[in-house]
Length: 250
Image 1 (tube, rainbow, N blue to C red):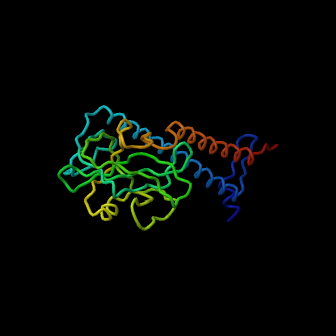
Image 2: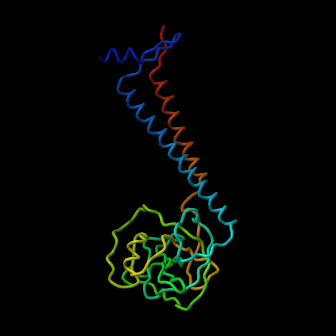
Image 3: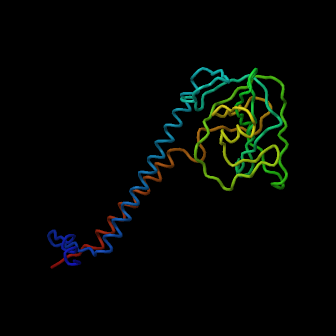
């Protein structure tokens, strides 16, 4: 069988003979496919980020939406500017854990904002606060409950997120959470929540560090560079395979 396999791959062109071994061939094929898949994965990530940036820019050009408690669908609302009238619920707030800013660990403050003349609320991300000297000491995130109108940008919470720890059972308020699960938070609050978050505008008062971006990490250019590297490694591997297994014959 080994002889048949070797015959299948062996070839001779002029004074050069190509005679690869069975296992080196299998290993090369596996590695080559793996590297190519990684390259296309990076290209796909770059395309996703291009789409996200385009969507972010398009929503900036649209008129400001007046958010209502009767909102039925969030389709097409990602990064849309919106205003809402009501009041903050100071007594029931959330701290979104494991959020970093400028290399420092901290939380993002999520405060329910109750619509005027309604029980429905929308979560408002009021920005980032640093972690204190101990995780047992939570930051003071007190906010006024007076009626007001606030401006922000809408963001649909991701369905799947990477979590560094398990969700802590709520002991008191504010509640430290690992991810935004609208249904769970709504049940804890005892009131309906819109399936979207309002990122508080940087010019609005009663907020913290707010540097909203359509993505975290690096832009699509870096993904394209990584894709080129993976494809380059695949080509290099193929060249090495050909050179090592080719010899001149008399």
